[in-house]
Amino acid sequence: MQERLVVDNRVFLLGLDALYRRAMKHNEGFELLRCAREVAWTLHVQPADVPVEGYYAEDERLTEYFRLLRALQEEPASRVAAVERLPAYQRLYEVTSSPLYGRPRDEDKLLPVGHDALSRALQELAPRWTIPTLTRAAEQAARAMDDYSLVGLAARTQDPVVLAALRESVVLYAQVMMLGMALEEPPIVEWCVDAELASQANRFIGAFQALFPQGRRLPDATAENATTYWGAWDEKAIVGRCVRVGYDDTRNPVMHYHWGINQSQGPLEVEEFWAPEIWTTARYRQERAYQTPVQNARLEGLDGLHDLNL
Image 1 (tube, rainbow, N blue to C red):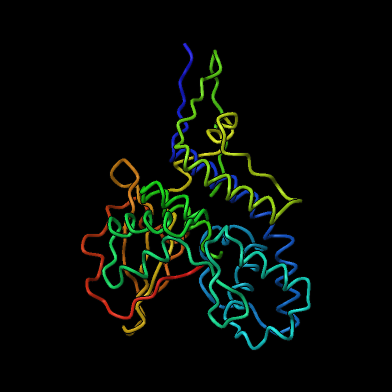
Image 2 (cartoon, rainbow, N blue to C red):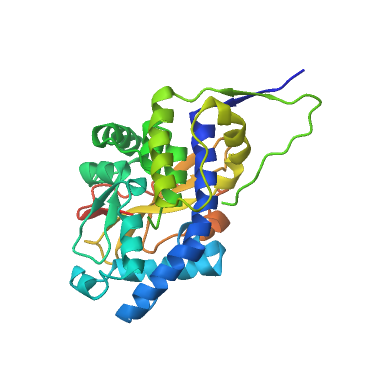
């Protein structure tokens, strides 16, 4: 008897996320790292001494790239004149301005940051941030902004697990397990992805291919590629992903607002919490991912909240 495997919205987006991460790690660890090194050397900028978030802690080259780009992101726009003719700077600017990460927003810095659907939701709902309200607001913002970034796609599903997982993937702008099954008959893989979501995802995929034409390609979001997306997704691999999505700088010390993917009671859920330091995926995965979420870990009524753009 053939097994029926369903590629629904969650499976598809987590599969797309896994394929994106695999391709992006290669792009960042080679081409973009060379660009960041050249721009940093020209401007005499040292790598930032900051916690290494997301998958960037998995590899020395990715860690170096993360710290260099974080340092360059803090440089003022007044330094653009020194590097604007460098192809390396132009390439970094092209990547950080891409719709893959939302709408580029100029904050008078050397490089722009991405303003996505979750950024908009955080901005509109401050100071009262909760997972349910932010999830609903991000979905509305994704449609209003026509946001087809990775986060914008996740927001359209109103699935906080997917939203947290994909925002962690683009924390600067998982281990990928391919599913192998020994079956007497090949399984039937059914494509049950919403047509609108697939259409928006193909815009993201097209933008990615245009930005990295020589790198790994992402498969089109079509029923013909259902098996590829089923093979790429791995729900267990996203357990423990943690992303800082906002902060409150009116408190001393500054308080940071995080979402972490938790699996302490069966199904995946998203835990929200505040902390005076930045929690990385590595730390959350080790210390909290499999523990019961802390009650009352959210501080009510804070002022001076800021969303974190990519």
